[in-house]
Image 1: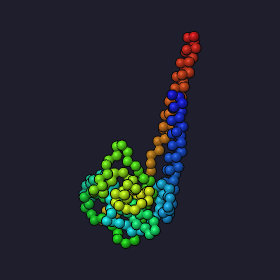
Image 2: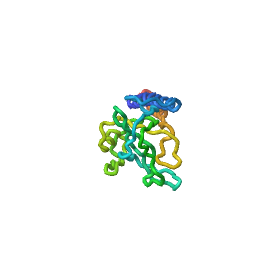
Image 3: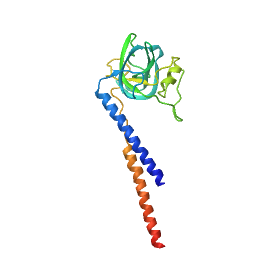
Image 4: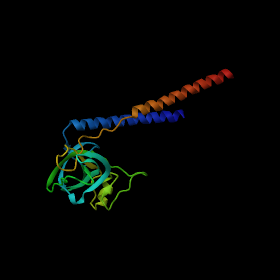
Length: 214
């Protein structure tokens, strides 16, 4: 048991270092200007990509209630492929839209430049909601699965989440900042190592008591 507790504590130390690096990377990305999208970008890098949005292949991702001028509305994120010359299509999360929009959707027809951050792929688990392929509504942000359902050629293995201010009279509403994941690993380190230390103290007390009785 002692070995197991120490092992768990050491694993959380490694996770703490990893999460700290991720948060520092996100903080730098927020501070610095966006860079041109590369073929293999780092997760949560702030980048800019250019191309043509395929509004005819728009899809929805997730389910989220938000406050709107008309009151609380159920909505989802609008996923639109971005076609680029000589490169694979790139799925762009353009932002949140209500399922019953009260404002028109902003779907530009010409060349566009999208600034956002790179979101790594997600994968469905045992308790994930089932994607509704008929209505193009997905609940796992897996770009490969979404691109396949939209009958696109091989897409980039990540999603570009658009960043920008909230539009005054149009949907969607893009993300306003990069995500900041919680970092609770230090508490886990203290917990597992603390349990290991407690177990060691109990064993020492038990061993001394056994020695005195002998």
